Image (cartoon, rainbow, N blue to C red):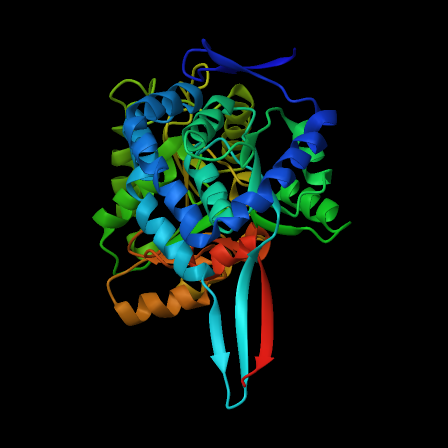
Length: 452
């Protein structure tokens, strides 16, 4: 049997193996999931929630084990892995309650008619998940799918198959057989899952793969939810708290080695405060230590050599085209990339337009707020954006001019519980979380009858 071997990106040592699912067998897996779906749907919202609530104790009990696995397989610092693994069980009850409220029937009445809006399951959902958050991203797709009454075929990234399997194993401690199935492999298995007769594909990953999925899904008009890439901007206004702005830029450019869909990839700073901001950011970046995520470090390795080479090539090309290295830019080894701050970055450079997904903070000085907004919007992407400034009215005005789906003001982009995770333009199609996000995994049906 063909196996997929997972390697520790920090050391190159094997972490474990999983059996590869033959692409030709994917449809049979989907068939088994479809056979299990009616009984799962028949439990109703309360019944499914009661089953899934039991998974919280399993996830909590394995949180430290899962965190260590995330770090060994994906590379992020253990402190970040603990946050990811720990959130799965601790937030489960509140997430299920939010989903129940979103999926309950709605009734509309007039003098002589009653309409009931039902949120029915679609059937079988195919979930294709990324490697950068190898447990929380499956959680974002699998949990609402199951609560809606669907069964799920999960294909985790080939870079982190052990994490995906471990997450599914925890849920399968409480789920009926066949409700959640894992298939392993790379492109062939992903394409086979998209081509199968699943009713929906939920995907997080690159824009190019998302476009392929959308083309293939159009053949039968499968439902899709796609969270794709980004090239997130940060605008630093003249009155910004520069210490806090620099701290955020360092955190959001370098966490998980920059391998986050909403990493800050382009920083536009007003010329009047650019020198001071660059100095503060450079000092913070220079102080970061790099190493194995199992040690007390700030920045771990890139997930693999291909991603490392992509980042280094962008840095080298930018420097050749005129960008200036303020810190980093060299001293790299194996899969490790030193946190790098570049200034003088322009849209003529690849690093100014193409997603980097690495530990590089790119600073561009601008003469005006209008220029900052124009250049921030000069991208096909639109996932997140951030504005730093002390005048609430001014920051709100700038934020409302940005084309991103999520904008943070003096903070990260994520909203409060109940708000959607949503991209604009080519960064997404559909969205996760929130009432409307949970309903993405259902078929809405309206039943109208006369009132006797």
